[in-house]
Image 1 (tube, rainbow, N blue to C red):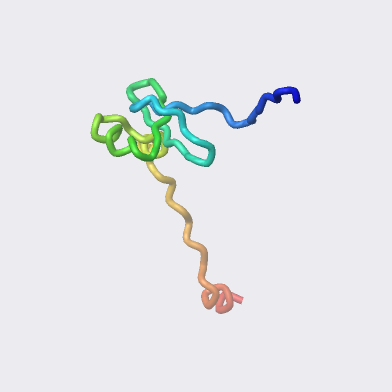
Image 2: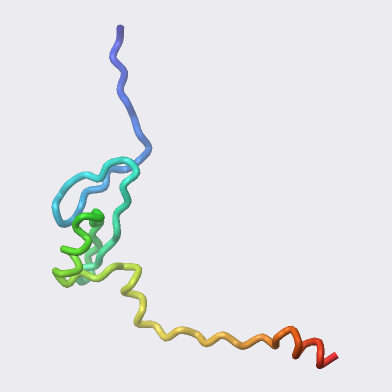
Length: 81
């Protein structure tokens, strides 16, 4: 019997804090340390936050939110007719 190699389409992701490779199905959070991006496993996320790293999803919070225009309510639209 010939040996077969197993090929997966999932890329190897290594935790930037502990160096562990994430298993299939595990998700990593992206943290920023200055200009560098680090993939961090769920177990090390608190450790990365304590170290001063910022989550990439939260780092864009510096922008000013655009105010939404209020739509007229149903009764206001019906009264205007």
